[in-house]
Every structure is written in structure tokens, then in C-alpha cells.
Amino acid sequence: MATFTWYLQGTSPTTIDATDIVQFAGSGGFDTKVTVGEYNDTTHVKSSGGANDSSGNTPNNNKFISQTGGTAGDSQGDWGDGTEDIDQILTSECALKINFSDASSVITESAVFYAYDGSTTTSAPTGVTFVAAEQGDANWTAAEGSGSAVSITDDTAATSHDYYLLASVSPDSVGLKDAFTLRIELTYS
Amino acid sequence: MAKYTALEVLTAAGVENPESIFGKLGISIGGIVVNTPNHLINIVGDSKVNVRVGKESIDIDMPEREEVSEAVKAAIVEKGNAATEDFAARHPERFEAKD
Image 1 (spheres, each protein chain N blue to C red):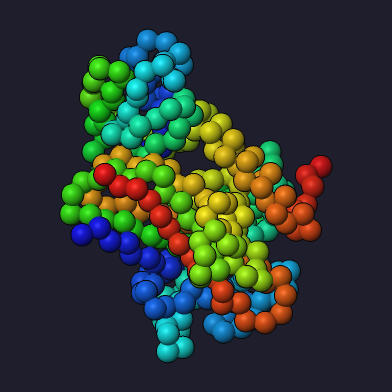
Image 2 (cartoon, helix red, strand yellow; image 1 turned 90 degrees about the horizontal axis):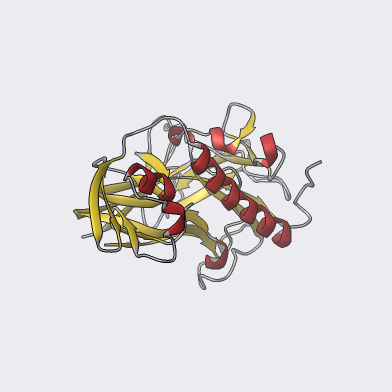
């Protein structure tokens, strides 16, 4: 059976289960707020019961810095080493790793990653600006709704496929933002 | 894993005038149907890749490589330009102009 497994990477990976929350938080760590207009300084996995599942794993965080302020118009981000062009990020430094596996060796095509409001995939998440990129991309994508998704490179045949993704969020207004779901789609054969 | 453009793979496969066949002959690389020269493909798993052009088929070896080629960079830049245009349209208040 084909399976997706999501991880928040860090010194150790934290598996993100179906009922877990990926929490984008402030500089104070788990459950702290992000200032309106600013981007996440930390990322965590929160269980449906409210526990910090990524505690002890020093989870990665990818923070949007600029869309075109880098070399030759590259986007910039900060993943703990200061501001860098996002095309310099290593796979191990990306916040998200999504694995797709199948017992058969399959190709994957037309893979996309985006955020939506949790109800309608074409609708942007509510009250936030969400940007994402595939490892190796030169620029962030405002991946809000299926029509603006990050396109992920097609893979030749294998039983296991890893997708490394940067993700960063900024609240557009005060208050909890939870009309906000991450999604990956692909075709395999 | 190594990232290549479709044109790089066709060139490595010895296809004559590879730029000219897009849109004229059916092309698949590793089972992935491609329609443009800058279509990016990750070669994962086995480095041997089947290349089909029309009725012709050949297996070639596309090795791992650390460096990102200029062709791949150009395809990534094109992707990035489209993303930036969309970002600027969606969030003009957050988009800073590059001098």
C-alpha cells in the first residue's frame, strides 16, 4: 500500500501523525506567539492532546527573510545560521521531510505541496501568509491553495521517495490561526 | 539522487538534435513523460534510466552528481521567477522591490 510519512526534521526527526499539529511559533519556543507581520522563529509538533512531541529533538525551523533580496534575485531564509539564499539549504536543514513509499518501485509525477484552509483545497489558509519551497529552489512560493502550490520535481522509479521542504508562516492579524492545513499530492505509477 | 533536465538526459542518450524533437515525438525518461527541454527530473534509486523517443528506446547511466548544472539552475530560476511574480501579486504589502 502506498504511504506518506511526514517528519519534522531536527537533531532527531519527529514523526507527524495524522492527528498532530505542525506548530509555527515564536522565538520563545513551543506555544509562543508570532508577531503579526513577522515569520516563525521555531517549529514544533503538537499532539492532539497538546503535548510537545518534538521536545528534545531540537526541531528545524525555516524562516522567510526576503523574496528577492539574495544573490541574483534569490529568496533568503534563516534556518539557524543567519540569513542565506534558500538554494543553499541542505536536505538535513529543511523543516519538513515527506516520504512516499510503495511496495512496488514507482515513479512520482506532478507532486505539489501547499497549505489550504482545511476545508476547500483551492482556498488559501485563513489569516496567514504561507510560503514554502522544495530544497534546491531559488525562491519561495506563496503556496496558498492548490492553484499556487510548490511544484516538486518528478522522481524516477523507486520504492521510497523523500521530499524535502521549507515552510514559513506569518500571521496577518492577531489570534490563533487554525484554518490552516498542509497537503501534498502526487501521481504515482 | 541527481537532478537533470530532460534535454541533458536526451543529450547523454545520444539523441540527435534533441532540442528539435520536443512537441514532435513522444518522449519519456525513466517512465516520466516530458514535453519541454527544461523539465526537471530526479534520478533516484537505480542510476540506469530508460529513455524513449518515439519508438526508439535506450537505457543509459545518469550518475550521481554534487554540482547543480547550469541547465538545472536555469530551470530553477524560471520556476522562481514565476513564483516571485505570483507572490508579488498575492502579497504586495509583503513583497520588497529588488534594486
